[in-house]
Amino acid sequence: MRYSLKEGYVPEPDEQICVVSYVIAYTRIGGGPDQRPGFWPAYREAQEVNRRTRFQNHRVGICKGLIRELYQRYPSMKDEPVYFRNGGLAQARIVETLKGLLGSTALN
Image 1 (cartoon, one colour):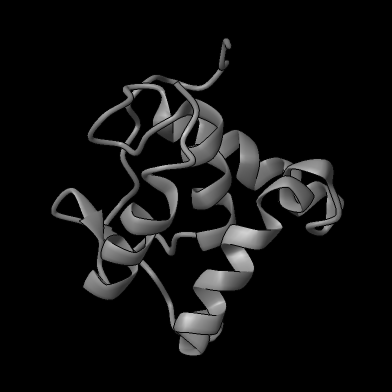
Image 2: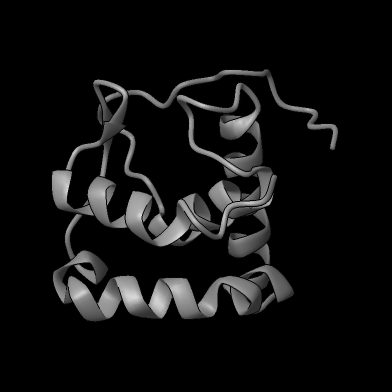
């Protein structure tokens, strides 16, 4: 995969993270920001596709089960802002859940 955005671009501390785009990027490239240098470009691409299609695209469909399970475990995530700080998502419960959900399903 090639991404036109700068590799490794880390969000600003006050930049809100889209959890759906985060899950899509994680599954597409088989790891998070600490494992894959192309994570943030993949995240930004997923975010742009999601915005453009209003979250009506095949990538959301592919990750729907993971996203649904995450929101069932933590319903407040739909309404609470999420940020990337100190190498992970600001809400620790989300980081641990994502690792648990995606660790076994990430692409190799």
